[in-house]
Length: 102
Image (cartoon, rainbow, N blue to C red; front, side, top):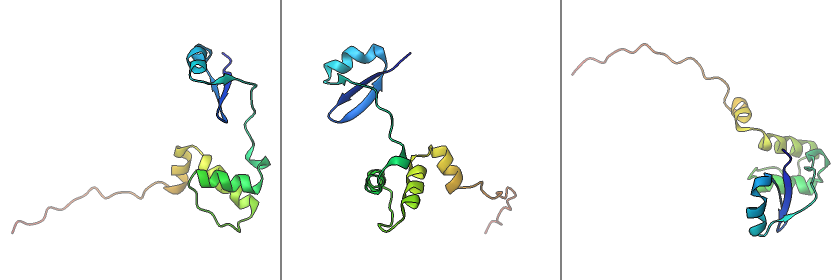
């Protein structure tokens, strides 16, 4: 099933055809399909803006390649990020010794 591209107030969505009547009633307008912008084609200012919108801190003097890496990490699925941030935990001891009663 092909999704229907719609726009409203500068926002762009692709919706299920079944939802078109309700979406149009909310002020959305059918438009031409837009290709997602490739981060590699973004200007440095656009990369910085995207990082800021995602709440990612960065050095204002960082090189474009470093900013792109941060943006790609920010857009990575959470499971992938969690694997990078929190590698497998060390084994946990399961043998416990009861403390003597006072």
